[in-house]
Image (cartoon, rainbow, N blue to C red; front, side):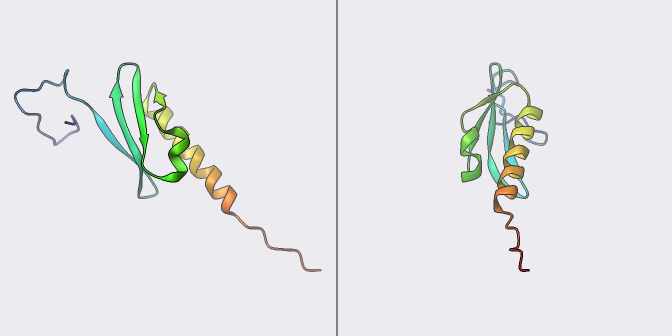
Length: 87
């Protein structure tokens, strides 16, 4: 059960006992899910470029966002093909 805005928590749960899960997206595609646990957020990857972060614990969502953005930038740089010089 998530405690995101707009989601109702059943009366048997309280905000303290409910799990918090966040969908992490990169450019409109699911990168994975971040689940709150003691000490921060555990990331579970849903796509290949993010498997390197799978099950890593991040103290804050901002740190997770930075790690995902770093992998996206690295993936984009790897895919860039430079034209051959024809002289």
